[in-house]
Length: 303
Image (cartoon, rainbow, N blue to C red; front, top):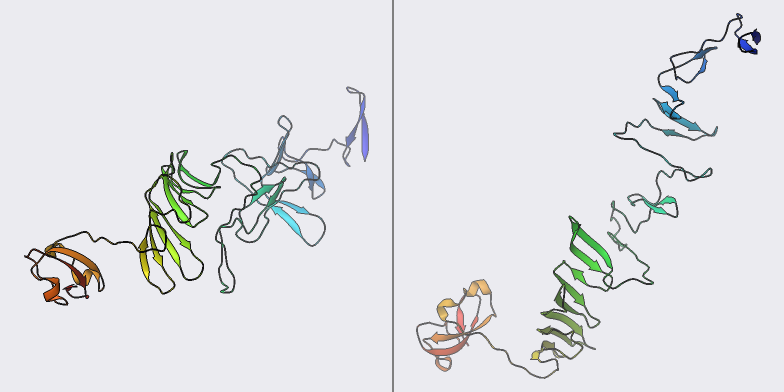
């Protein structure tokens, strides 16, 4: 390497093999590189000293000298993008977790779990699969905390709460420890309670209520009770016998027997036939007799 004294600066300047100063390759701001023994420059590798910005027009191949290498592919963003590495030992995680899992930040690292997945393949009849699972460790939370809150324009339209309630922003269902579901509103416990309570053995209650309070076991306004012999009874919550009232109608107002199906019961007020004299016969309207009737699948029969 040759040098010459520069009388204007008082320094030794490097000169090329031919005795002249080395000529930069390419255009202004282009990074210099060895291009076949001479300094070269290219528009695909540019450095701006004012902004400290390095622009690479192609791919960057990060090779550690081993078998594998990682390539940063060319990206054409629609706006400025920043890739941040936490510290000198930080890494950029590309993907984690099993196939289909949604990625999330876990203590500064990219992670994924089978509990939160959008791509599922249920292909084993011996396996009980879960489509979507969200597991919350609830050591302390305010009342009304939501496990799920679906919104439109910032307004909740459907939610599932941590206390077991689920519904919309105006009404919800609440399960109780006895298996009863209570229909409520956003501001009250609500009405229209319906539920099922299983009793030891073959017995069980189907319970209905129109109460503003949560009902407990045995505190039903109306229940259907099936005893050990399979007999269905109407009760007030006990195993006793109740009553069934059929709303009276006329023969002409009866729905077609074939439509309601065999076994359906009704009560008419204008039968031309009496129960005692025409039991088992098809009912005829136009009279003044009050008789029970049932459908045999084809006709309404007195009886």
